[in-house]
Image (cartoon, rainbow, N blue to C red; front, side, top):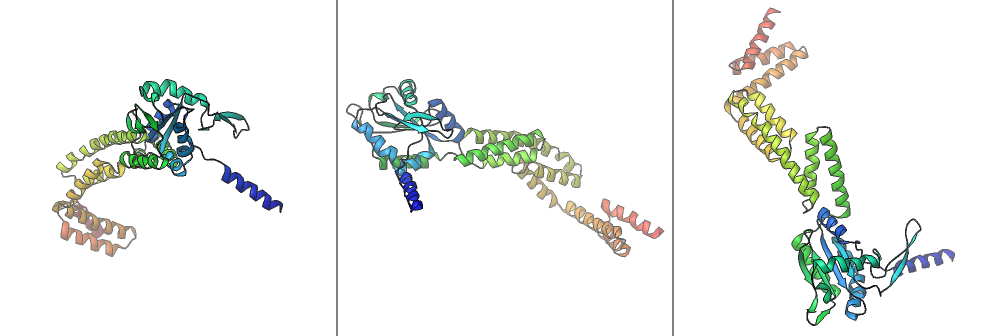
Length: 343
């Protein structure tokens, strides 16, 4: 009976607990988050003592679909009034604080300062007619205004369903930003990239940077990673240029090794792709194919020689001289056969 009573209390508390819109305290914080996480800013401007303005809080700010979608934005709340009241909240450390009853993640002082100092200066005249919602990008440009009515007659509140629909269209057009998990992952990748750079491990650094680029978001962290990858690719291009004299001098094995090193050291870069193409093209040359086949015979012969299987070793040396005697490995094979004859 006691357990049942406890469960009833827990369930009643869970279902009774309101869900509130989460807003950041000020414009500076919102802009920073918008830039680092690639999110749009959603700013709501209200006043008190007006039924249409209060309807925004009662309808939109408590709508489950909107609250879920709001996580894709950086939200701001501007209101020059505080008649709507405050609520007392207990923090994790046990301390009690007074917060805005409309948006408990901030104080009434926060939204009053925002209304006076930010919204009035950034959107001239916007506070003269409310309720109104602005969607702003990280460059502080208004990308959309959500309102219902005319400026002269005043605005009615826009139903939550229509706001949600409009915000979804904006997300489809501008793209979603980084989630909290993605943002933390990006920071971890940057930490790994910097650590690899400190150890002069350019391959690992590049790998981490390319993982950041793959996030494919319009955020500072991704853009910086793209720029860093370009700089590393410039280094790769210099290494690739060093292979050209080797090819021209007929030092094909050295050229192949150098091209492979560029591929392995700078994977995922445009230069690495060029190195692969040049290496494949070089390997397709008839004289290079003969040299590589000769090297293969030579390596097999040396393998059997190391195992003291001298008959097999002699067999491969002889085959090498017969087929590819004009290569440098053919010359080496002749010397090996001469040594066999002296035994």
